[in-house]
Image (cartoon, rainbow, N blue to C red; front, side):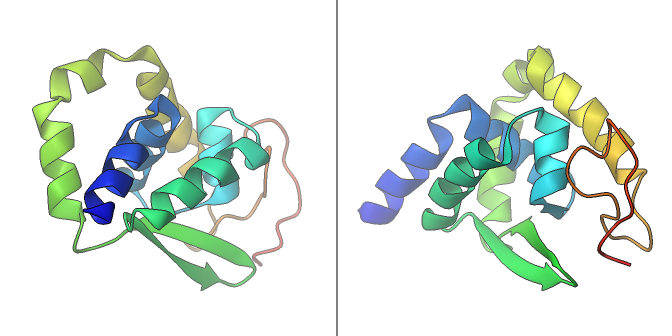
Length: 130
């Protein structure tokens, strides 16, 4: 039963739902998530921890970045949940803005990798992924 409770907890917060929506679109590093959502890394870290505890995401290392992705076994369930709630998801302005900013942020990648770090939509920095 604890798995079900953790799943409920992961889905019970709007910020965590926004994170999952973005991760359904692409595997992302924390700075890409933070920039897309316009939240601080510390806030995002707290939410990612809850999502990880529920077993919804996994991490991998890409050079110096930690990349978050939806756990493959969980993707069908999340897809069903998001499809069931599609009208609410599509009408949420924050999620619409997140998706737009994510598109911009992914456009800054070099060789499929984050190359600008946090604040990439605000300023251009020399990336550490090179």
